Image 1 (spheres, rainbow, N blue to C red):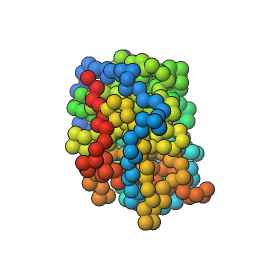
Image 2: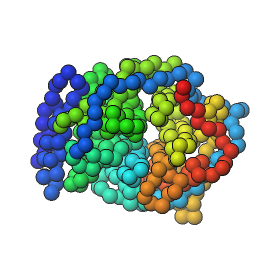
Image 3: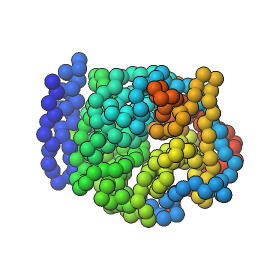
Image 4: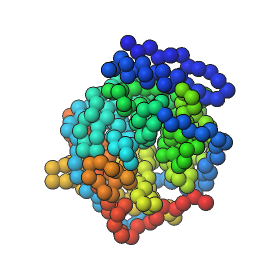
Length: 345
């Protein structure tokens, strides 16, 4: 049985020995290093904090097709995350804390693993401890931050705790792909229960045989944060009723979409204008009655999605819970006249 080594303490925020842990797990189941340099904190301006949709200012809506779905996953879905680009994996967490991985065709590639997951954020695919792995950041049911790792000889996702030196329960998080070698495994941002208006961002990098979180200076939002997005240009934060957000990037074009607490999707424009996004049923695919999980990527290199992929999780009926795959090409490929997402200065 795998026994996790103790956390190592250092001047930096370092967690347990990564390489040794992965080797031990791989054995029981049958790298490149990032340069560490001084981080630069992203800026958040108040006018980028999005709030409720205003039906008086909404423009004409956008309709996207549901094109495929998983089979019945059997239990309520709490969150959805994806690894785009070369990764092409969908991560699903359930209300009971289990986590399961699907491919971009909606097929299960692992069994549900009991990892006490509460919230997942989008993952990154790359070399960790000398092995190509998918790493999904997430919050467990105790409010701790973990990297959920899968790949190589690891047959099911495993939780790798991240010591970020945070006081209090972590309430939410978002992640972004590394922009250069300095960013290491991924960019990461979170907020805590005791400081819901403060976004702590940083970079998760591999140093020696450990994963290290290099924190930027925290930045303050005007109101309690309920969702965030890390784009190449910086961080965007959202307040209630928004519960989640994703940015679909395709050939330099970005489409920022939010999910609210009523299960509604909204496209956010550069001047704050809002466009309702609806998802229509396919010939044999039904959209969830209420969306409880939501993620997307503009770069899906598997499954036959030239315009990227949006994944919705939710109940189709009282006993039927599915991940529904949506084609966002109307946003990412077409000449549809829509508000462009503003880049931060």
